[in-house]
Every structure is written in structure tokens, then in C-alpha cells.
Image (cartoon, rainbow, N blue to C red; front, top):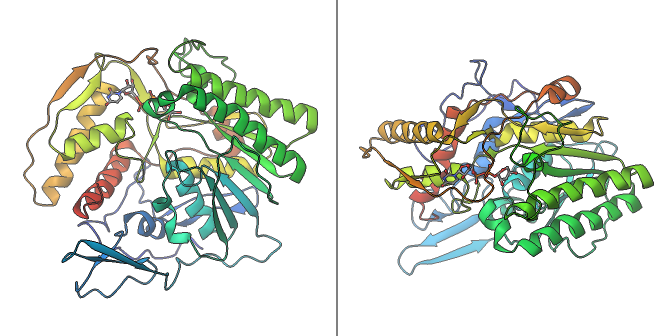
Length: 423
Ligand SMILES: O=c1ccn([C@@H]2O[C@H](COP(=O)(O)OP(=O)(O)O[C@H]3OC[C@@H](O)[C@H](O)[C@H]3O)[C@@H](O)[C@H]2O)c(=O)[nH]1
């Protein structure tokens, strides 16, 4: 697909065809990069169609049973039922010759990050297998691909071994929001350790390239700011976050063990706070909490005094970085995150302003939301900002989305879901 493809505005909420300006002030028309012989560029509007589309159409709505590419799900308001038929047509994907088509396994492919990665890889014409246990992921995130000849979805927990032939493995499976990963700490550690062990074993046997999604949480509550990749971190090994922090740290250790010992071709991405459409609205992370609270006119819950900082990156920037890293020759860890740092208090203001702007544009007079302060969870990092020098140097990657544009996109997504009663 080319950068000159003219995007078609999609139908759904009002203003869906708005121009999205990047950090450089230029409109974002495509996402993705041409790097290392791998072109990951797709029109933004085509991706938006996948996550902004309605989940169903209403019977007798006059709009037909389904749009061109959507699932035929028809809601019957009279008896409150929904009927599904098979797809009439899938979203178009690039036609790749077999020599360029890769067999790609995405563990956690039905999760927030995974589903966006799957959309991109599918649109680029690759064969994608999703492995997910649906603990935090959901089939609805990728169901627009079910039945496509290039797509396969398997319910499987990575703590058990899995056999498949593949060329690349994106190993994402693990709950990522603090309330979710703390819900069953032992299972989180098990997933990080045994899941990674199993997938590295698979990579060793198949000689597939292996990318693990690690996290900024390996730096713990950092004493170095911003955090470069060679900072070893400051983690409480017995605290409530340790199941995730230490789980990911040992997963990285395993990854480099297989790399040194067995020559497994590895990539390690350290992901900083990421947000965007399809993030579970109730997963407890700050971006989804604030947006849902503001849309419902509820108070925004700031934990602690709101002086702790985070740097928020939009999902499409992350996917660009992950695909570039996978196809590069860089085997060291690489931070992928946005360097614009905000205190949580400031961020609450930004979210309430963006929500008020969108509501106003949609003709809704919404009351100004207030901030309430709640206790700070244990071991909550005080400052977090990535040093992205390495990503810039080795991947020629930089984030393009500014926070207001990204938050607005997510607000419109949640609004569309709420309008359908899906939230
Ligand atoms: O409603 C809320 C939720 C969260 N917060 C605060 O907002 C900050 C960010 O919290 P989040 O839960 O969104 O995310 P955290 O930065 O704590 O953890 C995240 O870090 C990086 C990723 O790898 C993980 O996905 C996630 O664990 C924290 O200081 C938290 O205490 C609020 O003030 N209010």
C-alpha cells in the first residue's frame, strides 16, 4: 500500500474523518515505516475502520445487513437478540508473493497491543496465528479476521508448550495492567517465566526470530531519569508489582540465555505506557480510567498527590517500533515510548479538556469533571520517561502522535462503543 492512498472517511461517530496532526504539525495519513526491507506502512483510515466500525447493525436500520468488510451481526431490538452470519468480505490485505510472506505467531494476539499488531501484519499480507487464553484478551478484538485464509486463532495458554512452524514470534502474552497482573500474582510470574521458556523453546526448534514485549517496569521506581536501556533498574523484588517487574526481568534473562547458549535470534522491546482504542475500558490503567470517568461525568481518580509522572505513547507508534525492531538486526533491548512526560495531575486536566472538546463538537453540554484523590498503590514509580536515543539511532524510529491527538482518538472510540451499548 502506498503513502498516497487516499483514505476514505468512515461512518460511525461524528468527525471520524477529522485530520489528525502529528507532533511535527503534519497530517498523519499513514502509519508504519519502511525499514530493513520490511514495509509496514498502511493507510491510517484503513486501520481506523477496523477498530471504529460498529460491532453490529440494527435490523431494519435500512443500512443493509453489514458493511462491505464487516461481520454480519444484526441486532434485533424487538427481542434483544443478535444474529451472526459468516463474513461476506474481509478487509483487503496486501498480495505478497510466497517468498515475502512470513508465518508469524503472535502470543497474546487478542489483547490490546496484540490485536493492533495483528491488524497491521494481516494488512501487510502475512500469515498470522494468534495464541491467546482470553484471560485479559478478547476474541472481539480480532474477530474481523476469523475465517480469513491468512489467519488462525488458537485458544491456548503459553504456560503449556505449543508447536507450530513459523518464521517470527511476537511474544506478548501476559496481563499488563497493574490490577490484572496483581489479581493472580503467581500466575503472572508463571506466565512470564514458563510462557517465555516455552516460546523460546519453539523459537530454538523452528529457528524463528523471537521478539519479547518487555516493559519500562524493569526499571522499577527509577533513580535515573530518563531511563536508558543500560540502566539496571530499581525494583522491589518482594513488592506487589514484583510479579510483573521481576517476571519480565527474568523473561529478559531467559531470552538472552537462549540467545547466548542456543543462538536464538532475539529482539527485546521495553514498552513504556501505551494507550489507544481497544484498551479494556475497565482494566484499571490511568488512561482508560480517566477517559471513561470523564465521559460518564464522574470524578477523575488521581492516586496519591498526582505529582508522579508518566510518558504516554499512542498504540500506532508502538506497533511501528515493534515491527521495525523485529526486522532490524538489533539484539539489545530497545525502549519504545513517547518522551513527552506529564504528571498524573496534568494528565487528568488534559483528558478532561479533550473529552469536553469532543462532547462540545458532538453538541453535548457536559459538566466539568472534578478530580478526587485516592491512596497511591504500593511501589508506584514516581517518575518515568524513556530515553529513546537507541530507537532513533538503530531503528530510525520516533513517536509521531502527540498526546491530545491520541487521547481524542481513544475518546471517540469509547464514545462509539458506548453509543452501541457495548460499554
Ligand atoms: O485511576 C487511576 C489509575 C492510575 N493512576 C496512576 O497513574 C499512573 C499510571 O498508572 P497505570 O496503571 O496506567 O500504569 P503504570 O505506569 O503504573 O504501569 C504500567 O507501566 C508500564 C506497562 O508495562 C504496564 O502496562 C503498566 O503496568 C500511576 O501512578 C497510577 O497510580 C491514577 O492516578 N488513577
